[in-house]
Structure formats: structure tokens, C-alpha cells
Image (cartoon, rainbow, N blue to C red):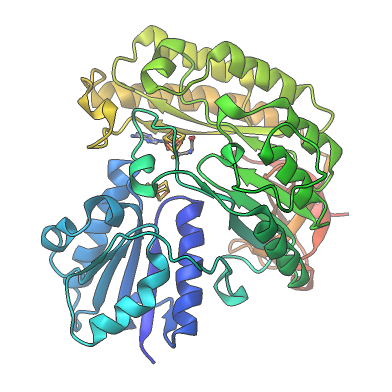
Length: 441
Ligand code: SAH
Ligand code: SF4
Ligand code: F3S
């Protein structure tokens, strides 16, 4: 049996694609291995969102080529593959094939061709008509948590972002198929489903089959209610796009306890001027109103965001607006990024006015402000009881178990491993910078 090592960078969509690649390869008679050094094939599922992410591909292929062993077959998958196509074959010596974001279902066939001696294979085609969205239990990143894509691609074209180019246009999965899969996952012992997509609230299926009779202005809020009705313990969803984030989504969360109290709503900047340059399609006033509505909810909804500092033309005043916004919103956590110019995007053509040193200063300053807000938010949980899904052993403590709350906080506690896979009441006894510690009650 040929052994395949698969490494994954980037977002949940890539993790999810990799799970399906591994499932298909298993079915095609390959064996997946966690040991790169002994693998006959090395697959790298790549990310292109920032230069640093893309760089990982080059570093990793270099490392494999310079290790003392026969060269494995090397295949590049994912976003860099889609964007660069066959140029990768020349750019990175040692790469045998390139498979785009929607061609991942064909990796098995391509591998067989590569073993037959064919080289320089490139497939950037569309998904097959009967693409299989299921993931085998053994290839899921967790036995208890499942990622389920509900929409692929992105039509938004924010000026800094490469994703619309690497992932193509938005395409929603049929609601009936989503529901079918969730019922199956529930039967197999999965406790938590993450509905994933670049913009889940842009969900627009071709037909309403499966959504009949469910309330809500948007197809996404009707889907949330339909998914809640499956009775699965927990449903989370990422990412939400502010422009299309409407009250009906909050109402669905308020009606169904199994829709988790966590919303990830990337704001990107606190300045309307910069948001316009980014073509985000939302204003700060509107965003603040959305946050106020979420904060007023009976569900105590946790709120997280993404922010870019140093976008072309961002002045000190624009940056201070972002600082103010972060103080106002009190995010439970925020992913802060330094703007990274991506070739092919409209912002790449704009003058990169903020120096790297200045980007770093702004990053550190914003991080400091966010950390202070975050600490305050997290301290509210001290002494409270959270329902934690026991997901895995925590490496640091003996008998330590780690898991997430419905509000998506990491909670560690000590308990018997027989509790893995169950939802446990944990009283928080210690709040750390990015996680909490507690005891079973
Ligand atoms: N679809 C989601 C997330 C896309 S990528 C959304 O619309 O928010 C995840 C995050 O990476 C983005 O939210 C953004 O903050 C960041 N990002 C995307 N392109 C970037 C770039 N060129 N430089 C720095 N950060 C970037
Ligand atoms: Fe990128 Fe904007 Fe699409 Fe998000 S919404 S994936 S940031 S283009
Ligand atoms: Fe990266 Fe592609 Fe996801 S660029 S963030 S892996 S969609």
C-alpha cells in the first residue's frame, strides 16, 4: 500500500477539503500516514491569503527535497495551486502535480497516473457533478466535531483579498444534503457541527427543498432553523459577512438553544474611509448597531472578529478609529493581521503607504488594546459553569481534557478520559489569556 502524507495550511475550508481528500484516497487503496519521512507521496494543501502563508509551501518542499531519502511524489493542492497552476512546476523543482481547489476529488486518479510515470500533471477544473461531500470518521479532524461546507467561493472581491480568485464564485450546497449529512453525523456520535463558508450568510441554494416551513428572511437563517431542528447538540457557523448579517440570524439563535452563542463577524477596519477602499460594503455605524443588537441578546453571544492593519492609505487617524472600535465592541477575541499585498488583487495596485515597521507598531498597539478588552470579557466567566464538549486529551496536564464551550472558549479541566465525547459541566476556576481552566461539577 502506498503511503500518503497530507499537510494542510489555511482556513477551515482547506481542513475540510483535506478530510475529503484523505477519505477518497483511503477508498482508492492508499494509506494515510502522519510521518512525512516515510511517505511515498507528500501532498500540501496550500493557502495564499497572506505572503507568509504562501511561503510555507516553498519552505516545506525545500525541506523534503533536501532530506536524505528518495524523493517522494509531491503534489500541491489548494489555493496556491489554483492561482499559480502549471507555473508552480517550474517555480518549485520537485513538484510532480498541481491540483486546484475544486479538483481535489480527483487526487486519487492523478496519483495513479503519477505512479505510472506521468509527471507535470495539472488539474484546475471544476468539481465533478457527483462530488462526494462525506468524510470518513477516521479522517475527520475530531471524532466529535465536524466541519460542513454550506457555501464555497466568494463573490465579494474585497480589494485586498485573493480568496475570490482562488476559490471561484459562490456556490451553495443543497439544504436537503446538508440536513441529510447532519443527521448521519449525529447518528455517528458527532456532537458539534460547524457550518463553514467564506461568507455563510450569503447562503443561497438553487432550490428551497429542505427549508420549507422554516421562518426567517434569509435562506441562511431558514437553514439555521432547519439544522437546529435535526436536534444535533451544537451548531456553530463561520464566517459571517457584516453587510449581509441581519437580525433574523440573531433571532434564530435566540429561539434555538442548540444554535451556539458565538458570532464571528470580521470588521477589518474601524474607519469608514478604509472600509470603502477595501470595498467591504458596510459602514462602522451599521457594524456598531449590529454589535449592540448582539450584545443586547438574551443569549450572551460571544463576539470575535478579524482586523487588518496597515491597509494602503491607512492614516494614523484611521488606525485610531480602529482602536476606538475595538474598545467599543469588546471582542472576545480578534485575529489581527498586517496587510499583505497579494498579486492580482486591486489593492496590490495601490501604493503600500504604510511601512513594514509602522504596520508592526500598529499591530502591537492594537493587540495590546484587544488583550486588555479580552481579559475583561474573559474574567466574566470566572466562577461560572460552562457546558464543555470534552474533545481531547490536553498535552500539558495528566488526565487533562480540553474542549470548547458553546461560546467557543477553550476550557481545560481534569477528568477521566471516559468523558471524551460528552458535554460536561465545568466550573471556571482560572482565566488565562486565551483559555480557561475549571473543574467538573
Ligand atoms: N471570508 C472571510 C475571511 C477571509 S480570509 C471574511 O470575509 O472575513 C481571513 C482573514 O484574513 C480576513 O478576514 C482578513 O482579515 C485577512 N486577510 C485577507 N486578505 C488579507 C491580506 N491581503 N492581508 C492581510 N490580511 C488579509
Ligand atoms: Fe475575502 Fe472579502 Fe470574500 Fe472574505 S468576503 S473571502 S475577505 S473577498
Ligand atoms: Fe487560505 Fe484559501 Fe482559505 S487562501 S484562508 S486556504 S480559502
